[in-house]
Length: 128
Image 1 (cartoon, rainbow, N blue to C red):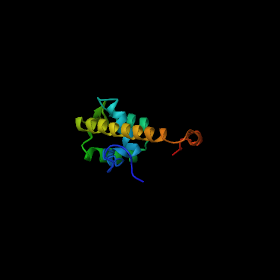
Image 2 (cartoon, rainbow, N blue to C red):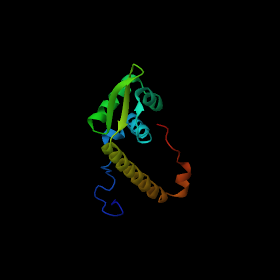
Image 3 (tube, one colour):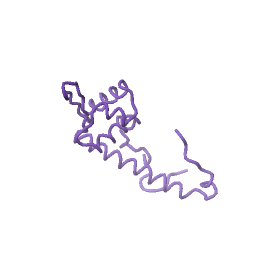
Image 4 (cartoon, one colour):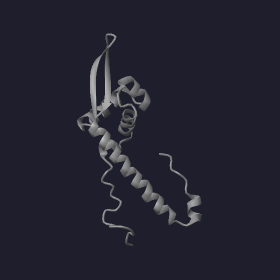
């Protein structure tokens, strides 16, 4: 069966789904940072993303190596403080990634319109 539509070669490959961003915790971190451009402290980010210290540290390192976030270590009232900020490159990649996700949703919506109505009534969203 041949795929319909424009240039079906690799039509659903979605090259823009960057593996660095696509992981759930890193997507949470980037979403938190893109909505707080001045940055977030490690503790705030940990709470917003519901991550452990070790897990957050590991994901921040991956994002930092990918040049998507910058980590600034300093002090606040004589207490060590780590702040994470999204970089200009990270913001650009994040927005490109969202564009790809939007295309996935459009493609899925188009595909489901072609399904019989009786079948659609039986579909339920999965709980991952």
